Amino acid sequence: DARDWAEMSHLHGQAFGDHWLSAMISSYDAEVTLCQQEQGFGASPQARALATAMLAGRQPELAQLRQWHRDWQHMGMMG
Image (cartoon, rainbow, N blue to C red):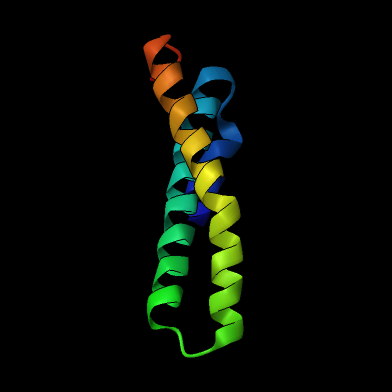
């Protein structure tokens, strides 16, 4: 949320990367959940089609962010 992004304004280096990655994962998780809800319960065919298209892009990106998070933790780059 906006507070996460505001908190980042004073961070640098590893602390910034850690916070940025966590915030992005949280944001993408929310987008994926909303799209899945739209697919399952939405009344508009256009909105369901948009949700499907968005999921096609966001799911691989979310998987990449999670992989980076795991990799960075393994390398000791995360706080």
